Length: 308
Picture 1 (cartoon, rainbow, N blue to C red):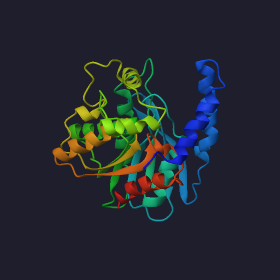
Picture 2: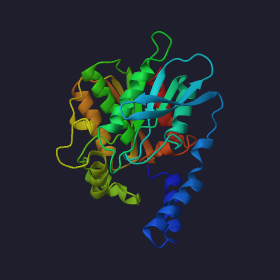
Picture 3: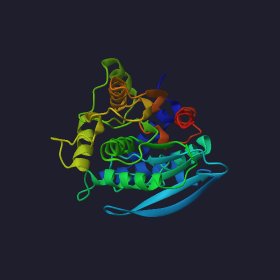
Picture 4: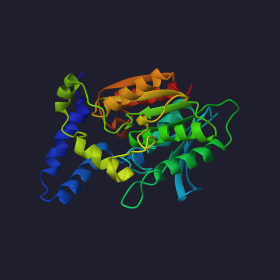
């Protein structure tokens, strides 16, 4: 199906808003202001039926903020969730963290911990974000749950890579393994696999793309280099056997779709049970938009069913 009208309207509005700016900084500020108005404040998302608590734990690099979400009634499982943002951006208030956590808690009846891992910058590099997520995972696994309740590890985009890397580290060093991985449009490979010619032609309708230069920039910022990239930094290059069953959400109009689909084939090849859901008409990062959008809701339902 074509790109969802929600996104085509957003693209037109964003282009019109940024055209009013002169410098790159002005355009960026105008773009951010437009997006806040268009998407709404994520922190205002209705949390009825879900109790929220901000806390922090000790980690190897200092304090790690977490936001905990607990649904009313019996808790049937738990999720540790990692937002996206190219390893460089994002926080607990973004919709991909806050609204997703509320909806997973509500739809699946699970407790959710959203982790505010350290973002990569000039001084913070790999493996610091993984260290934070791994510390949060170990802490979350120690919290009381009903006997036999599943515990999942998941994230979106760069956060999906961190979740997958944490699962690999747990497999190799010990600790409680996840019962299921929930990966939304994962950024799992460098270099990023190419789209098919047909899909690349369809992507012409999307004005904001993951060009090779921008992907290279993300990796340089995260790892510090683009050669000799450690296998667990972009974990599609790692040994993937022995991982828990996995659910992958794929955005239809996404340059990183090729990474998600390659990861699915890799997991299946080594015997990891894997299912995927193609969110039709959606662009990369669609969980950063309202769960009232049909395909955003369907993506969240796909994850919630994996926790049953």
